[in-house]
Image (tube, rainbow, N blue to C red; front, side, top):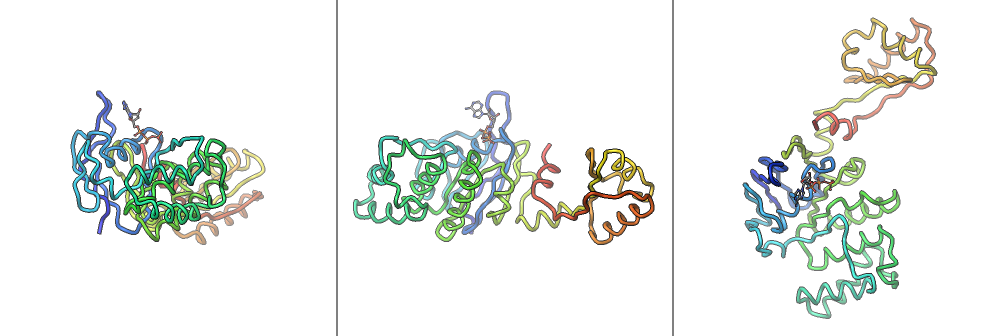
Length: 305
Ligand SMILES: Nc1ncnc2c1ncn2[C@@H]1O[C@H](COP(=O)(O)OP(=O)(O)OP(=O)(O)O)[C@@H](O)[C@H]1O
């Protein structure tokens, strides 16, 4: 079953069209990576899903119920972590979760047990300090705990890792992997290594539409290939290699910079053998020879305008 479906969504701000016939769905139990460059419309989409912004066209359902602008009924299924979560800095995490629970009418005993469980999940069980003294990573983790307080079926996180250092990012990714056992996650980002690390499915947003969707493995197999890179000591050596007639058709698809030449390789062993033949014939001595698996980043750069 799909927890979230978006069909034919359109949104313009004045004469700037941001979403144009956007359609995708998020299967239950998955971590869905919603990828797009800055300004591509990820936050706009999320705000429409939350009923906070009015769409010009299209239909959205959450757990089978239609989302209506200005009506927050479907938000009972959703936990939301905005890109910059705001807190009362004078409160401790426990006090803050208690306030959030009270606002939504949770019984006190449930607030206390859930807060304990969630602060443990996000690694803040021992954090007794006021939130105002927290690092960005700690605030994001507290934001996840707060978003999970009402046991949502869908957790929406808007760029939860973008502003964090590698340790803070890894902590958030590990938490999202744990969260997946209890709820579906929609995760917007432009950090593609994070998507590769945890997402089951991805959708790439560009020009207001999903231009590519599938599992990370499917996309890699279908849209990108391995590559072989040869790196030289000098740009002159790289230029001689790049000009060698034995490269044949590969010349049109190679990528080069000052010192290295990268060739797409459907069969990496065969391509590497060809490179070694050219090196032997020309007498060029490489600094490094390497093959690389396809990367989501290459696919992203290929498909976005
Ligand atoms: N309320 C608004 N009024 C006018 N333009 C807006 C409004 N909200 C967003 N936009 C514009 O819509 C476009 C998409 O913005 P949005 O914040 O949805 O992108 P995003 O993909 O979330 O970007 P980022 O990765 O930078 O957060 C941007 O050009 C932005 O300036």
